[in-house]
Length: 217
Image (cartoon, rainbow, N blue to C red):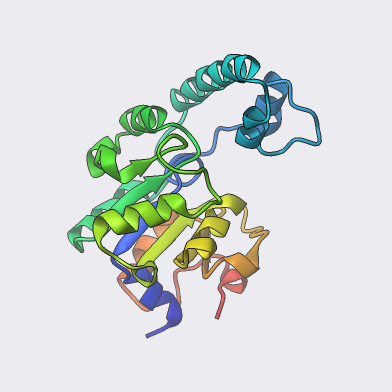
């Protein structure tokens, strides 16, 4: 059995939401512009936390408006339903760790037809844990489930998702439809789509990864 297959057999799966379980719709440069951020500012939440409280509240309210608007435009990522069904058939624990709010995450899941797969307690947003890449969110989920990091996988499409998995000691899966995989040193498995994970779970995984060169051996 390959290293990848051992990872895919793990019991606890924690997902990023936007761009991972959903089709990507976020234009982050445009969002940063809407919030009055400079080109040198890259982390939206860090930027907001640096502002005086009244100014931060105004811009945070604008961010929430933007996030709800984006949630209304997205759809479930290809393979998301099949993957979640497969995990639940295996009695896996599944959760979401997002830099969004829990309320917007629940709204998004409702919009894309995935809300029934997750309990609210298994969805942690920026108000329930220190935002990614800090490992607190993963630590809280695993503590609630009674599991250890070496039983868990963090799945995401961006640097913060891979960093938080590494920081928490879980395996990491990078989903990138472009197959660019900009952070190979942080990913144990790299896939173009969630569909590939579903197919790999039922076999040795060898023939199902589109971007073969990206897989960490």
